[in-house]
Length: 318
Length: 207
Ligand code: HEM
View 1 (tube, rainbow over the protein chains, first blue to last red):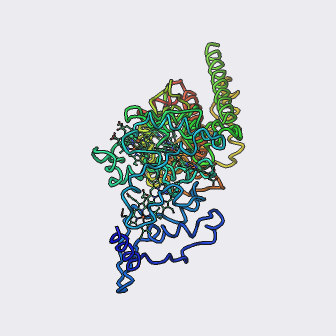
View 2 (view 1 turned 45 degrees about the vertical axis):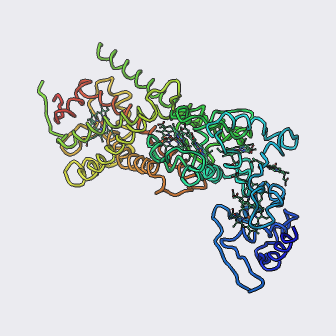
């Protein structure tokens, strides 16, 4: 017991982690977070590509790589939805020691519902329904959780607050591509072979154009009217493959990608006018006025032709 | 009654025209289908329509090149370049003929000969369609096919929207042209005469 305390004291005195380098802190961080300096105790290692251990007795410094998966970006953290948090709000205090103890690692993490469930401040997000949808989705496998898509250290409620659909599409698709174009992350969760997205979507023409103007979830989820972002990812066989689901007057995009804007109403006589701001979807954008004019012009021409024909026939008989 | 025969439509023009007419009809059909079909009632299944439209568009574009080059290199071009004087009056005369004169069995105001195979209305519409509408139609179509090549924003709206609107309006104009064109082609000596010329190359007329 005494020996143990002595040993611990030795380690405490002879080996230490260098002080945090406060030059990485930007003043904007203080505006959103009250624990900026405290967080640096973690970020001095987890915000850098390398970290140092120092032996105070002999002055020897050992510099090591930080595993890339354990590095997080300060700017992203302080602009994410949980920017006001300290690391230890979610992580065990046991992480304050290094090497991190096993108990800390095995501690169960909070789920979104632990904090957001049945809370009227967040009722408009309808977390409970999202939870149900996730449970029914194909991703409901061991060790998968909301956090896998919603990076705990950077997630932003993007589409809800975005004016630029194209940017939102990119943001949301990157959430999927994190795994679906990064096999290292994918294989952590499953024994399945790598899925080549380009090949499994080779039936879709203009892939680049489609993937930058619609989200993966447009085709891969079931529409749900009670939440903004549908979460029930369906098995491959049930994904949307029919072009007219989007390329038609009652495009499903109005119930998915453009849902938030649709509520603000139609603009300028274009059916599905909201889509027009960002993309032109063949078949989905139609102008009622132009439709009628073109029909009228065509009709009148036909009438004239018919009239002319009848006159010619009668004239020939005479 | 003797018939006068003039060779007006060389083989290349007839071939060009045959391919052009077939492809344009396909384009109109698939174009309308893409624009107006619904999941429940696809005129033509969307992806098939897109496929056909793309292939036909390629052929028409290539074929259009042949039309332009052919009319530069051969004598057929002069029918498009040489204009009679007083265009506006001539157009009006021809129009009055179609509206009134034709029923009174009046003679054609601009009889066809080796130098002028089109009447003023024909010529005017062919030149507008072939040298104004078609190039714009093709360019806007190419813009839609290769969106990375086009300006991202035109007049402050998405480039695709701009090209699409141009494309659809011109598609409409050409469709209207085809309708009228086919009808006016029945206005020859007999309803079938002009179609026959476009097949055997000879214009026929009673003296
Ligand atoms: C199925 C549809 C079509 C039919 C039945 C048809 C029929 C004819 C006929 C009978 C002629 C000879 C009479 C004349 O010189 O006016 C002709 C000429 C012509 N047609 Fe068409 N046409 C069709 C579609 C088109 C289309 C889609 C275009 C262009 C977009 C077109 C452009 C022309 C031109 C430029 C000429 C004059 C060619 C020359 O002699 O240099 N036609 N067409």
